[in-house]
Length: 155
Image (tube, rainbow, N blue to C red):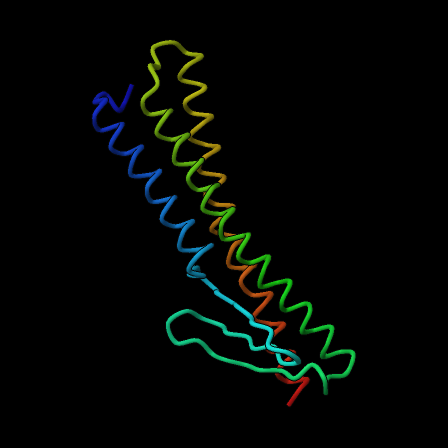
């Protein structure tokens, strides 16, 4: 048992749950996450915003758009929705990894089997964290590249 204090364990667990809850609220209600792409449909116009604090705005008129522009518009809207879901999933995965590490640190590992389980939990958490930190930046690139294509297609 590396984390002997129950109070510290509860504080860390509560902090992890609170941070995950705040992050999920920011993502799903405020639209604040890395690589934010949001869109709003207003009649025949679709306005895209990329970024949070100083967003780049891009508007496309779907009435005058050809098939390629329409396809890219629908693709960009779908990718924006998927990126928001990916951000939420990443927060949940990171919280689960953090919980596994906390549990492994709190577990009474006097026997060899329990030590093995603790090591496996920590390694699984590390792999989950690596997956999130490697895959999320590539997920962020897809909507940005589609918006660039859409911008060059319509200009």
